[in-house]
Length: 424
Image (cartoon, rainbow, N blue to C red; front, side, top):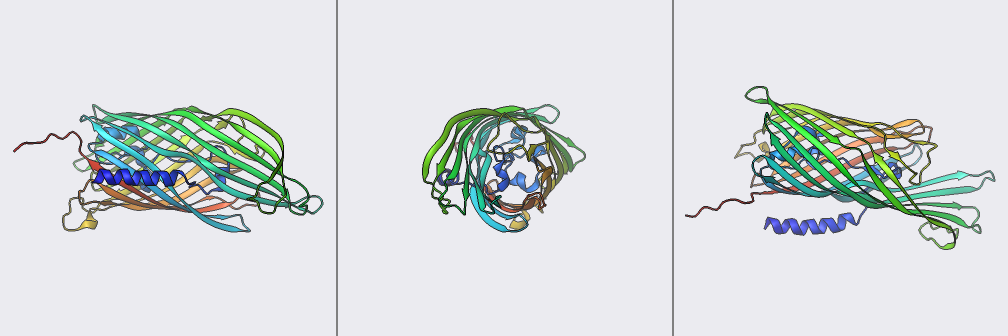
């Protein structure tokens, strides 16, 4: 029955979610959009997943965590994003829902694990109107719109080694398309033609990650856990077509009536995603509590050509992220009190996004918390997570501030494959 439910929900969620855009940030204007962290919902709640593993949960941060997997695990997740944008003069709020990931993992023997799945890699979704007066005191507007995403299909394996060390390797294929447009028009001269610029970009490439974990038993209860993941430098190639047309100057921006095509040409290039290092360490008691710290850093992303953007005010710089978090389970073995078996999680992060606009670094600060609700089968569970934060800031140099509120939901089902049946 569970397998039937998984198949049905997966198909429905996949069709609906991947048909929708679930990024609503003006900062997704740049590059290949906002890049997602490779984390599950339970990892998002704490922010310190690189050091963690579980016999019945998947962790995307570190492929070495699969070495601890002891049950076949199916997991899927979705998120609803609510964003409030403020430029100092106007405010706008919007929301979107989308699929977060689909994945399946299973143990291989007693010392290894294997997983594969699908997850959005980056997202583009914005609509920005820039209005200004020209030298003749006429109102001109530039309407910037973008939508699309790239996804990653990944394959991971983890293996236990002696001395409580585990190692892992992940390979992923990234693919997708990004559509961007710019509509220029003079609002005072409806008899004058407007201009419409459009790009359709296809992105693809491979990425590889290496991971390691170690556990050290401090005493009978306390365990020191540490993790390392290395995302190797990789190049994503992109190609597409750019078109410039003259169109009727219609006040309805959704009505595009082409008159003449100025040019239509192909372009191609590559995006270099630099080497990224994740370090995590924490201490805790198994099935009781854990508290940890995680830090990751990465050099600037480079592009061989622009993605419909202006280098005069945009700069890609080093990115980093610091996170503190953990979880607490009152009594994992409780029979009489369900809420004592619930896992309560929380975390906080401060991120340098790697984007600098008008000489101002774009930062992201947020807090997260949530619960893991076990099912009657004890192994299967539901994760409910919520995070809120601020990205960017309001300044005289034209920047904006985003306040975001994300609700995350994941379902995880567990089963035991290849069990030997006993005959009476």
